[in-house]
Picture (cartoon, rainbow, N blue to C red):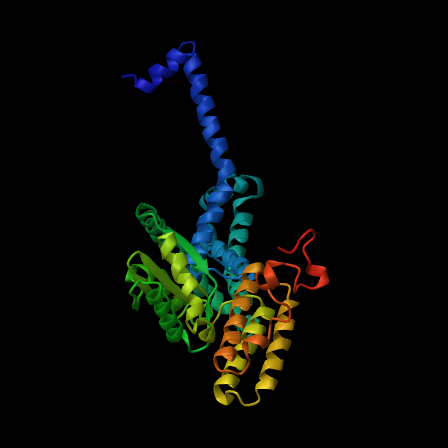
Length: 390
């Protein structure tokens, strides 16, 4: 019995031959479209996998870990190839290479790949882990259980992540990764600060463990990796939730999921907490140095108060000048500026300085110019051309 689609194609063309031509054209277009998008799809899938397992990693670490995941997914096919070279060849290469170079040679190739691939996985993770311990030989040997763990974890993620993302779309939620690296031993303090930010934004928070289905993959990976991924995966992943908001805290990243307006409101409240005392909010090493120095100045102020105020203010001004010379992205510079202004307000609140002698305001802001004239207190290089007094 002819289908409606086939009758429609016949009507559009010149009989059966025309219908076949139309059908071939449609199939060709679909294959061409999918081949062009295949790279984007694969990249997105592996991006989701890395984010779900480790959070958002710095560029170099992300590249190394993604490479390890790709090799781990290919490794089982290499193992199959040692026993069934023809099958593995067709599955991976999509070409009958065994007919060209012989089955014995193909088996040797697959054996070599099956042996070497986990070692490369171990080395990639070793180089990606900050302050990696152990030598390279140990990392290569640990690559075998690590590759198996990566494979199993990635398979689980490829099933669970699309489900979670679809659920978020149905709710109208968005997802944001925020760089947040808890200091050693201060994971719970960071959670408390996030909960405080949520409360200040008007959303009563709850701190609890991440649901079981979201940690199946990381549990498998952590068990098989034997500490190799401890720099990326914590012993226990926890979250802060409220009505329409979820915040998942990784060792080097935070995933915020929920309504965009609520997420923005909570992020705005970060500066009202002591989050920067317990975690790095900036990624660049030079920016981290400035954040460390600001926290040191806060501790000095806590201990000494107004004593040695002149020295504290001088150190603060010097640090700010150092910060002004940093070559870092705008977002990180804005975060450091906010931290510096918070410390400045502390100095003012403790009467270490007066309103007329704010440490960082060598030149007044444009809005504070005399009589509304933007040139009144601005240096020559900053004066507005054509501005007049009113």
